[in-house]
Length: 99
Image (cartoon, rainbow, N blue to C red; front, side):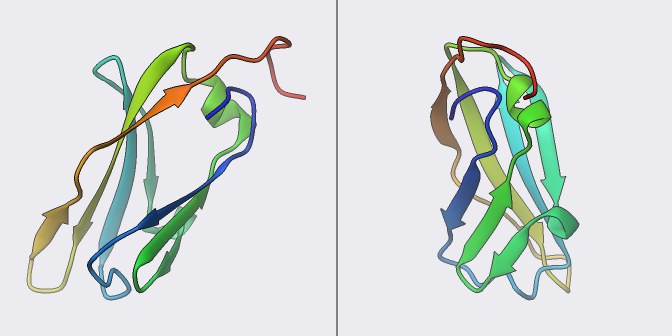
């Protein structure tokens, strides 16, 4: 992921999340939560979660560095799940800021 861009992240799951009551998609960097999106700010399909980040959101990450990403969800009946933690890199841009 490159700072100052608007990437669309698509996460494939092995569980149908369309019946989930709560979903959080959390981005963490250097042991600090940088961004959390909830179910209202993502597209949820049977086996996919899709989210597009804003320039402001990607500018909150430092580069070069790693980001950890995790999905958590709760279903009716209080069943809760958490995905494996995904790791990706953050790359710099030469002209910083929102354009």
